[in-house]
View 1 (tube, rainbow, N blue to C red):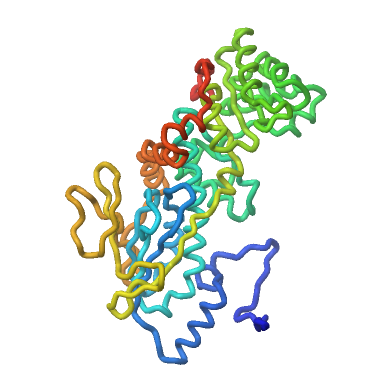
View 2: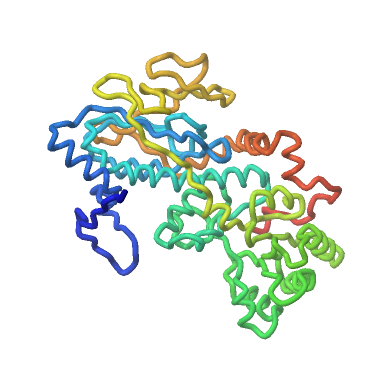
Length: 419
């Protein structure tokens, strides 16, 4: 049995210099799965364009919770389209099977936008969720997004915006939205351009502008301890180690040794910054001795939130495909953060607030959320998120498996003072 495939494209493909889709094509609904266009054509020939309500939900979430992100792009996409939309605010904490967005309108009027809607939400929410989980584990230790180089440069702005909403303390990419602090030290190539690491450190200290923290990369040629001491002598406020997957196989021992020698040499105020393949487990293991983390792929390559968009009402009648719950719904959040999903129109528990609020009416935008508003929603939920992360790891036993339970004293670096 063969499956026939048509190679005829409904739109001419306008390939620019880089392999990206421009804003206009996305806005016109041309960045879509072909079956939406074929379905819309056949429905039109059949004279069908039913009034529907469609909800966006995630049936399963890898970490058990999600941070909603990408909603502002969805709002921009649907502005002017003849539909109504209710949604959770960007930065909201949500759980599996909860609707985060609902659209009401004539199906053919917005069907072609489903691909972009889900793409905006799935990718951004995955990055924001990973960022929030890592930041919740880090506590008062700093976390920076260093992973935009692991993704296509065309989406660097989205990556850094999503990471910032998710709670990171800064990002590395210069295309981050205005208002997000930029963070970065130096590449190994910079150090290797000088005859010795010491000369590189001195040049960096001498010629960097005053606002640039003097954080020296101390693992280019030789022992991390030796280069860290050299960095401290050259004016470092922190030393960066880029080898959590060390060739010696014991990053804890390396960190303890570097910390000990810095303290012994009188550099107790010089902090330690860890980067290079850092995961949430590394953050939990080393946060007692590390002042800041540069996290790359664990944020930028985070698993997407696997949202789907499904009809829950047609022409005013509740209906749903197998595996989905029919009828429009509302998600209520109690003062303690507990969520309950009820049919739309039913009163929520005492003191609870409805999370899905009107956003668009007949194509007109009613409300938007700023990036900072979204970020503050996440920061306010970090204690709850930390509990979620530890619970998924097995409660108290999970915490001990995530965190290195030894007698190492708290690091003596001054953390937030030098970043």
